[in-house]
Amino acid sequence: MVKEKVLIEDIPITLYRKNIKNMYLRVMPPNGEVKISAPLFTSDNDIVNFVKSHKEWILQKQKLIEENEIKAPLKYTNGETHPLWGKEYAIQLIKNNVKNVLIDEEQRTIYLPVPKRSTIDKRKKILDEFYRKEVQKTIPEVLDKCTKIVGKYPKSVNVRKMKNWGNCKQDGRITLNLNLAKKDPICMEYVMIHELCHLIEFNHGKKFKKLMDTYCPNWKKIKKILNA
Image (cartoon, rainbow, N blue to C red; front, top):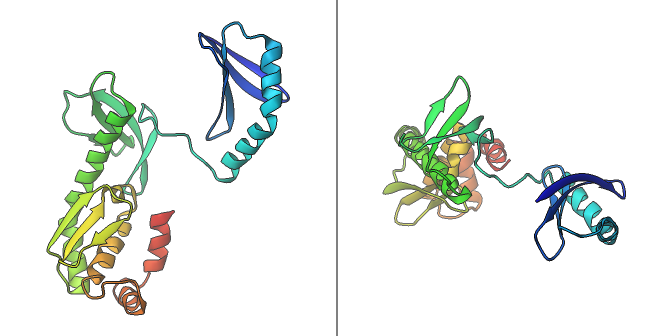
């Protein structure tokens, strides 16, 4: 593979010449970098014409990335930052003979034990499991505080990955999203109070909102922080 930096139609392009049959174009977040993969012996003229024919699409894609602040896909590699309880930490991969994730608060580093040649999915699963355990650890203290506020007690509280931040079943089972470990701790208290209020009012109507106003007066502000 041969890598080049070229400028075509005033667009900076990273060009990869590879042993492939067709030409491919990508516009990458977060900065709209244009990458083209081309067969090894493709002429410069063919590449220029390829860019010209896709110029409008490239500019539209770059504008979309900029306006929506689209981030590059996470790879869970050394130096990449990930949140933990509202703070940013750098990931540092270590050999998985160390079983537990280690946290260096002073250096703001998460040491992630992974096997050799681990995939992105594998590293993500290891970090997600760490987040799940972090939320589990905080449940007793948060639950004790919030049940005293609301006056209701759940049948159980579990943690898993889910679309919503929390869920409450009519039988009293509460489930929390493991991604709460990424947010400011006040967000977990808000979600816990929210779900406990469902043990009184099982909907999001006016009565429920009055409960939230009573038991968590600044819930609207916290909700914005949670969903940011």
